[in-house]
Length: 258
Image (cartoon, helix red, strand yellow):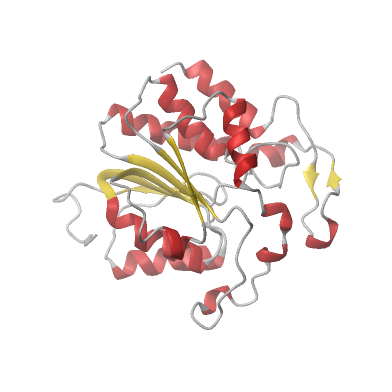
């Protein structure tokens, strides 16, 4: 793999080269921005106006490194992200495949492409009071994400778009196995729907990445799922909010049931 290419790709996706302001995180102030803050952008603590990912350099580097491990370790399967915003992490996945001249794996790009849903507090009490559905800054339509892929010359038939709420689209998705799943759904419902539909299809030796582990509803969903299925794999921190673990091969982790 050309490491220089993927390093540059990460910097462009995060927009740390030219720099741009951050969106004001207030649903009533859509369109307003604050000056570029390099540290916030490196840590992924802002909602950038131009960058193709909210993830900072550490989380993007984690995506690159684990995709490369999948290739180097011959873990079978494709890649999927649930909750893609402007598509940056998926673009990076495809870029790493391209840098390795891998043409027999797909990148699934799953999103409502219309922002987050209103919380279903009756069925998912952990989401009670969640207001993320009010932030239209999070609603990036599929055509824009496709355009972003095309800007990197990375839009082709290895990229598959999955449009709709995760609970509607993922259970019946004719795909898998997966070598890597990256979950960025913020909410309990979105995270649980993704885990229930995708984790059983994650290959032994594959990787699960959680983007929003710092958010209590997301963290609770992950902990509930892992407890229910007796998943004892070590959780590794990426930065202040991201984490990952490896689904170990049968025999190395006898407590995991799925």
